Amino acid sequence: MPKMKSYPKLNTAKQINNNTVPNSLFLPDFCSLRMVFAVVIIGELLAFILTLAPLRMDQQLWSDLALISLFIQWNGLMCSSILCLLRPFFKNYSNQFVALSSYLAVLLMIAFISELTFYIMQTYYITDIISSASHWEFLLHNLLIGGIISALALHYFYVQYQWRIKIEAESRTKLQLLQARIRPHFLFNSMNTIASLTRTRPEVAERITEDLADLFRMLFREERELISWSRELTLSEHYIDIEKQRLDERLSIRWQVAAIPDDAMVPALILQPLLENAIFHGIEPEINGGSIVVSGEFDKNQLKITVQNTNSKNLVHRQGNKMAQANIRERLNAHFNGRASMSCHEENDIYFAVLFMPYQTKNDI
Image (cartoon, rainbow, N blue to C red; front, top):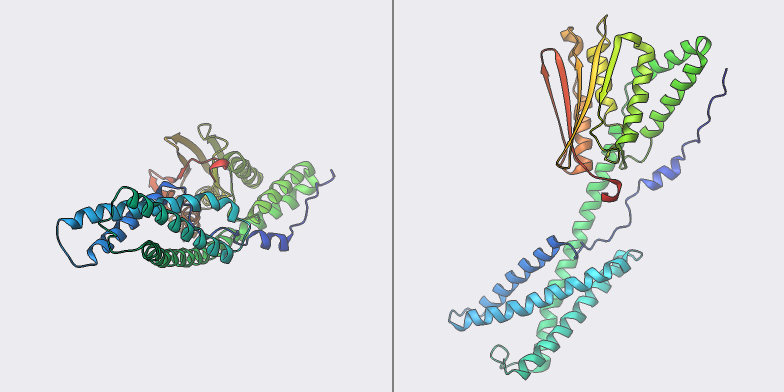
């Protein structure tokens, strides 16, 4: 009998460490357009509050609003810029250090802009809005307001960060449970198939064992990781190879997936449960078996993968608990945040399961 390939043992401790939440900053990315837009909106709301606070409604109100808006927007955008520039240097430090450094950087920027603004106003005699304020009063006034707003903002980001960690931990635990579910009958059938082939066709038994090992190694990998479509397709072919040894001519399958880019990233083993459902509910109950067609389309950065199979005429057997489909939907939502979906329907005794996923490569993750 040919020598079986050996595989490295799974390092459970290492896997647990890899499943921990990465040490990411609680500060948002101020380089993004979304955050810049948010800073502008918040700054304008603050300008309205400061302008309307004195409870007066006259023509001077609108000129004050314009000057205050300009000053606040200048502060907001410059503070966002400095936090954007400092972000790469904060990655190796604790959140407490990042929070304190960010707070001090914002205060220094506010002080600098206040000094520059006071100088410009004195130089060009724009003193209507600060006619009764001295240099130090103007500076302390701005630092006090800026300090309060900055402290509240940093606290909000920290609370949001803690909430995100909690959601990620819950999602990670749920994904572990979802990926840990594998039908016992598939494992037992595979082992029986290997046992029956060991004496008569040892080379096939070796190949089936390798295919099964490959599937289980992927099952116990880091659950958050996406894999390439070419890798997912290979794993699915391994699974079909195992089932073909058991069902032989009763199982017919066609792959029409040339349109799917090989570098498209998809959740690991997202296709295998659909193939398993097709075999368990549609092919296996029938004496003459049936056929499965896996087709793929790629259009406008959207992947469409369809698994269709002849359905069993046994109405009792074809009714499942839909747990595998629910698990797939939850995994798609966890990986793509609502940008992926799955739909199922039946037409003329042909069952269709259709996956929709956004196209993204390893560089996009």
